[in-house]
Length: 464
Image 1 (cartoon, rainbow, N blue to C red):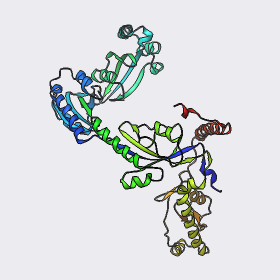
Image 2 (tube, rainbow, N blue to C red):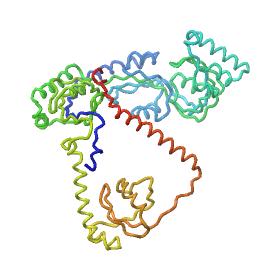
Image 3 (cartoon, helix red, strand yellow):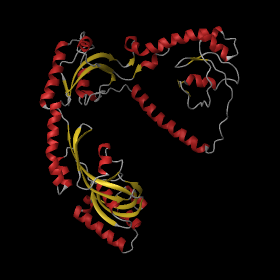
Image 4 (cartoon, rainbow, N blue to C red):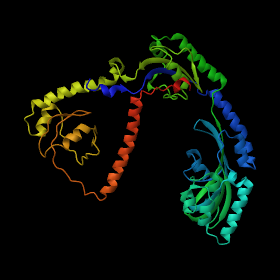
């Protein structure tokens, strides 16, 4: 009863056991994809429009932008920086896909750029053409001597407008590809107009720093996916397992077939994900209509995963019964029993004033610990020990303490010295930060208390 509120369930939850049958691509599936990518090699080599070739043939088309060494995936990084434009590499296997890559160009470019821009919303301007015309008019005004910053404040719809359109200094990869290409391929002082998904940009390149070799690489990828034959085989295996199981035999069948049983604890009614599953909403909905011990009446198809589940436990809202938390508290109970035995050993030599003598009597050792901080209650090399650290800071100097039960053992200590912290240099700011952190925590706690007291019932799970 002393710790019962530590096991108060804020809402009803479920504990599930489940087995996953993955339809991983077979060697035959891999060979089919390899053949597909092989057929694209010649096309990529002779392509006159690499961007279009990638858009048509890649599973995940990526914009063609210049990249520094270290930005390409490892398989390409060293190869492309030592090749001539037109070189095609591959096929190679990376991140579950076969890929081929072509070096389009290599040049030396800046490492970072400082720029500002004016963003025009095409919808507000009456269309893209009118937005482009407005950007061109603004460019002519700037070229004629008008102040860029003032025009940005009155014409830009971007959040940077208040700062005169300033974007600061940024490296490659910080901006959308079309914007990045404009500022890194241009030169200081250029006024460029580009169109992105955000609108029409009038950009001024204010500065460029650094100089490194960069490459533009086109990549075509084809992911390894299981064929319908492979998926059917995985489904059949899951269906066969389901046919052999019942509530009582689930664990035995898992063991007999040498499968891996996974467990999801404290699953709430609105959950849509479970560890290791792609999308588990159907599994959760089944669990909230099942009884303890039930095995799912179907194989759940979750992408390329086939799942058979068992409802192990229903945890009601409120203080949990002993049978639901027994496994959870067993380690703590064992530690408590061990701690009591250790305390008895310490108390047998409680008159001792020398830590070495006490350590010899209980089979422990004396370990010097330095720089213990109250705000960071960790004993170096051991664990977080809130109770022990708190006791240390409440103890007098050079006096052997009484036994203190911690998370990792029972401790007896003597404080050698205290070091006073330096005087606070900005107490007002520190108080403000603490107050803000406390206020945020209180806001969340108040909402939870109100929700609990109002006895709110959440029925979303019935409809989604």
